[in-house]
Image (cartoon, rainbow, N blue to C red; front, side, top):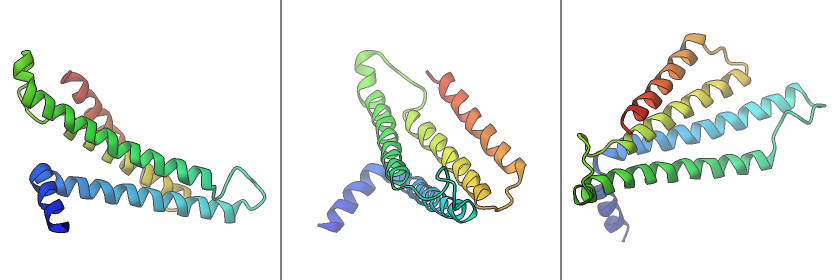
Length: 149
């Protein structure tokens, strides 16, 4: 049964598997770094209830990560619909797959920004240029997505 499911996923996702795997790892790293940053803040500010671990924030973080996964799926479904059904309705784009990749890349950059912010909260020196490069890339991807409408 496991092999059948993997075969179906591989045939449907194909070359997206490495990107999706990297995205999943990024979401996990963001969650872990956020947890560690909150733990550090709880030690640094023991009397301040604004800092530290909060199970509600943790659950909301998990819900947000599930939402990220769903929006990527929706974006790739839009690509599929456009490429498979678009001709019937007179909709034609130069690239068959567009929204899924842009959405996935934008969210990956969002995760990188969040990880660097969490590292900063943990006291790790994060080069300012790294944050700027990630933010510029994220903005460029967003602009590119707007152009493709």
